[in-house]
Amino acid sequence: MPQIIILPHEEICPEGAVFQAEPGTTVCDAALAHGIEIEHACEKSCACTTCHVYIREGGASLAVAEELEEDMLDKAWGLEPDSRLSCQAVVGDTDLVVEIPKYTINMVSERH
Image (tube, rainbow, N blue to C red):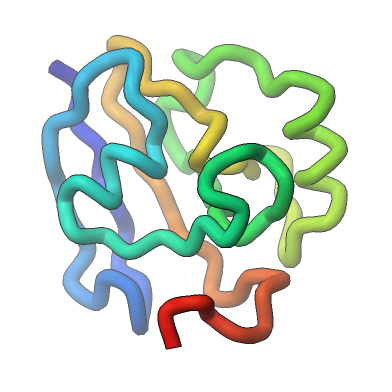
């Protein structure tokens, strides 16, 4: 089973995290299942960019982003070539290194 390595994030995951992920699950679902509270304001339906992440390593093992994801990513804060929506990035058979951006386009978290 591949590992997902979450790089430290000041608020969401200060120590970083490493956990196993079942192939076929999304990066967002795997992170949430391991207590990493990635925002997902649209309930993981590819209708916002709050779950935007950077896939720093292992991104070639992910399926190519579909047009809808690419269109949504155009609206993401801090877009980079390795940006993905974690709700759409499906874990394959390769370890991933994931960085959660410092900011999201969502100014108010729905959990507060």
